[in-house]
Amino acid sequence: MRLELGRRADYGIRATIDLARHHQAGERRKARQIAEEMAIPASFVAQVLADLVRAGLVVSTAGPAGGYELASAPHDISLLDVVEAVNGEPGSTVCVLRGGPCRWDDFCAVHVPWFRAQRAMIEELGRTTFAEVIDIDSALEDGTYELPDDLAPHAARPARG
Image 1: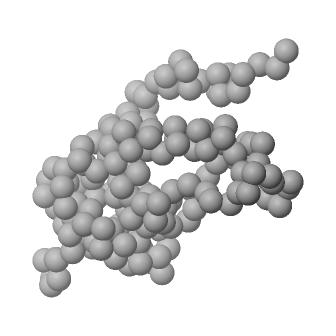
Image 2: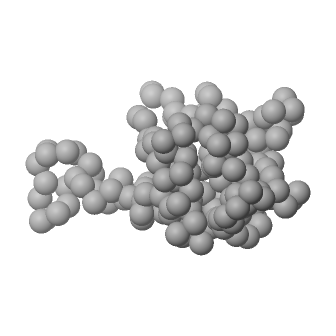
C-alpha cells in the first residue's frame, strides 16, 4: 500500500526543512537558494513559500538583504502545520473503495478502519516537529541515524500466516 504526499506538500516540507536548517543562524534564504538546495522546481518554490507565508509559518522580507525565514522555532512547527498550509486539511472525504458499493449514505465497510488509520497518521504528523525532522536529517547525513526497531523494513508489514 502506498500513502504518499502530493507534490505541493512534498515541496512545502522540503522548503521548511531548508529554512529550519538555517533558523538557528538567523539566516534568511532566497527562494532560488531553497529551490537549488532542496531540488524544488523554480516554478513551484514561490507558490509554496507564499502558502507558508499566508499560513504564518514563514516570514518574507523584501529587499536585497531579504528572503524567507521561519516565523517561529523549528520545535514549534509540525509536519501537519506545513501539510495543512499547502494542501488544506489532510484526509480524504472520498470513498476509499473508489466507486465501490457504499452503503449507509456516505460510508462503506472500510470507512471506519480507514479513517481511524488516517486520523492516527494526522496525529503523528501533528506531533512531529521540524526540530525532530532536522535532527533525523542531520543524523542521516552523518550516517549515524539508526532506524527504530518498530520501523525496520521487516517490521513494515505484519507476516501473513
